[in-house]
View 1 (cartoon, rainbow, N blue to C red):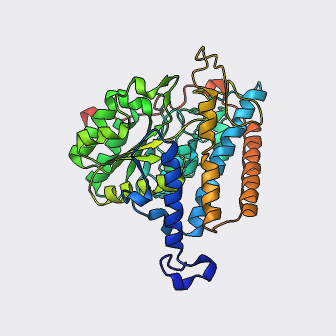
View 2 (tube, rainbow, N blue to C red; view 1 turned 60 degrees about the vertical axis):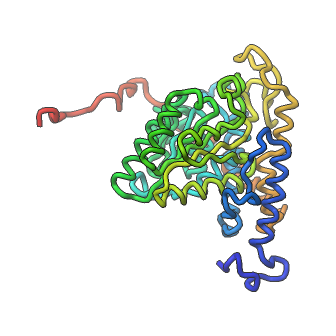
Length: 405
């Protein structure tokens, strides 16, 4: 591909794409800051996180949009399934609204080569976006979510514990907080063997209140581990506002305690997330230690399942029986939906003349069908057998008495 910074290698319509992309990033960052509850959103014009996104190829940028769409329609399809299919056994915590975070972060990582070569990520109880952005097979994911024997983990994981080591997706965790402890252990192992891998741990805003968060950050900073902690601050941990457990306006301020960079980024804009992640990844690979990234974002559905949602409609509004209340004002949900990650990415790529509106519409239709086909395939897969319930629990066959050897 031609050099993005060489104006002479493009026609008049696409002259100096780096400059035009930079201006576009600045405009979007300003729009994000205008409605953000943080005055310190890191953006391209502030120079805090570089201009990485402007140098991506058209193929890389289009793949970002494709990933966002795949996460969106995978989850929307499962929302409808939960609402309409009484035989569906999935237990889903939806990621819709947060797609730009997983996409932007994973686009900055190496996602092939298995655990010894790929960059590693650790997920949460809301793992779909992370798994898809890392490259997981959505057919096998859909089967796994319904506890089918041909699922990604043979039906043993369900949603909250899926994993795929072949792409460096080390797994989801239904508990709040322990992910970073395991992730920093992986980062220590990587540093010990001298590879150039990086470890990313995704966590929600609620993890700030856990001891695991602070232990992980402290040790990662002391040992300069190749570790990145991404806080997806969607304002609520389950049904409580994040301010109930965090005294600071920005969770990223905690980074100062450990003497490492803390970046607040607009989590609705995949380009801003990518810029922050790429900077953190380059820093980690160079042996300069960890970074804490706080992505301000929002989930369109309630904490679990699809209460308040209607088939075929985006978002959940009103009363949530699990919360015994309407814990989020409908106007808040709708306000965040005006800055939708899908729309922002689509408009950015159209503005950069990477795709046009017709191509964007065709991409979305094709991905929606791909997801429908994947879910239909999963519906035909065999369920796990009850008699197999103890498989993979105990070691089978003879085991050497290693403690004596």
